[in-house]
Length: 378
Image 1 (cartoon, rainbow, N blue to C red):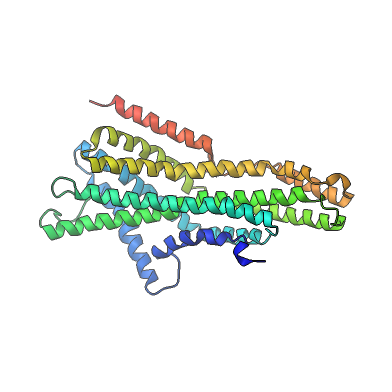
Image 2 (cartoon, rainbow, N blue to C red):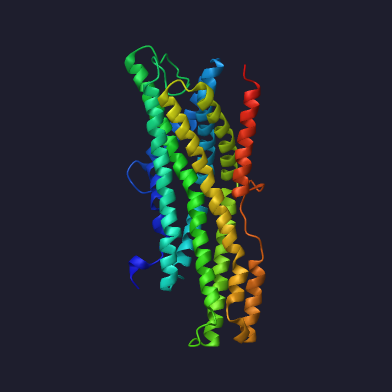
């Protein structure tokens, strides 16, 4: 078999693991633990704290202009620790996906995976990266073009950051670097769910193909068809183990994602309409608004798609040529049919399903926040 045509899910996660290596969490290179300690202490923890303290006793307009990013940083730190806590389970999921990769033996299966899940996963990874780079550039430019010696965001420092030009630029650089690293953490947080949902959906489709073909090739014996069905049951068990691991991994992190998106979308809309002081600030808020939607929509869309693929399993089983099979095959088929009737969904916090209905509910929640804020407008 040509190795270039093999299904290799691990290739789709190379960029994801690169983010963790850059943050010092993964990898084996000199001073990794020092990098990890520095970023975790001075950026992941202290950066949101300095933003919160910076809003103390500041005018309401200034507070609102920085509130969206402060909120995003708080939730980013929360999600970062949630995912970091679950890295062992994430690696276990990747191992199960690699086992399923080896089951794609036909050219039809390899072509489908290469042209659909693999291509879409790479597109998602690039889209998140482009959105992150755009947010970094527009935020920095908006800060540079602001009037006077103003920081990018309200922030507290144990000194007067406007005292001298060098002190100001050091403070500005800390915020620029800190926001960039937090955006990098957000890439690690937000790119994993949709890419994994997409890959799992692809493997469910490959299982559908394998099951529906059983019994239609007259050259294959009944015992061989029974073996293929049993292998299909084993593949289904691995897929359900992946779902179990995903439920544990995304249980808390995605709940924070829904809350973060709903709050920040509404705050950003208000900033665009009322508080953007120049074109660069308007552009920054627009990019930030788009980034909030990009954070949420792919996870919900591919979460729905994954559920739909699992719902097709009973039909694929029924499409096999089970009428001409022996009792042993049909007993195994009934067992698999019963297993596939279990609903497959993943809920954030055990409450909100990660699907399109949750996406629209979040958008409605954001609009409610927006209209509430308008009612307090002077």
